Length: 285
Image 1 (spheres, rainbow, N blue to C red):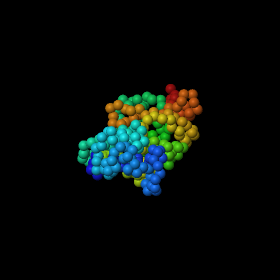
Image 2: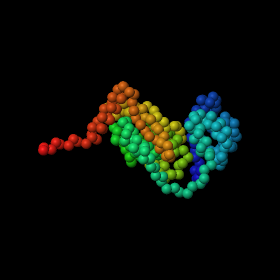
Image 3: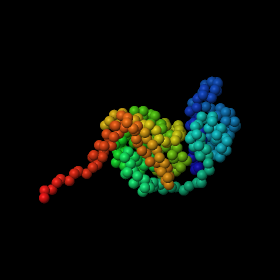
Image 4: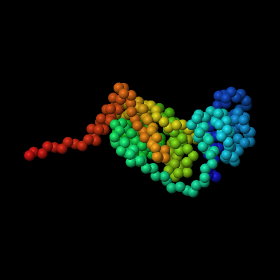
């Protein structure tokens, strides 16, 4: 970790403030000036001294044992993904010089695969940049295209926001998945630029980022309000691409025989028709 960053302490403090004392059976004594648990309560429940826990939050001790971290994770009610993230924050990492932006290159075979898929699909980088996409991806959203970033579009583009009836839930999952994807590798200039732009442009992002939620960015059913076919539920699969640094192949599909499948077929057939070359006029002999 860099000397000027206390990621472990920030994470512990953020998660402590989200835990209700009632959920742990703590009595309500006196007026609480801060949300969530007090430092002393976390320390007591985790079986460590209040002074030691204070040093962890303040960044004066950055190498707690895994046993201590697992005890803290239990008190802070972290799931498996969040516990793994907490442990990774305490792992020693070599100091780095200022890095150049990392260029993400999509494997040639994956690019060819995109063109053969009969379903909307695109490749997403570890910072949720769209690195490659097939033409059918545009049937879901014109912003599923190279050069776009899923975080910037969902948080800052009104047209993209309108596609998510449950925008609050969608954004919460998006940010949790982003933090999980990035992990402790937060000194990349692309990451710094992206978080800065989102923090300046979206109060919703700032609030979610401050929570330090972590969650696996995996496949799930997605409800969309599509401008052409109305409400449609699609399955979004996230398939890890081997040999890359966090790239995934995102594929959208619907239940076979469902009304959603009919809507998706309508969208993709329209895309195929518009992409097909115009027939050559017959020339007389």
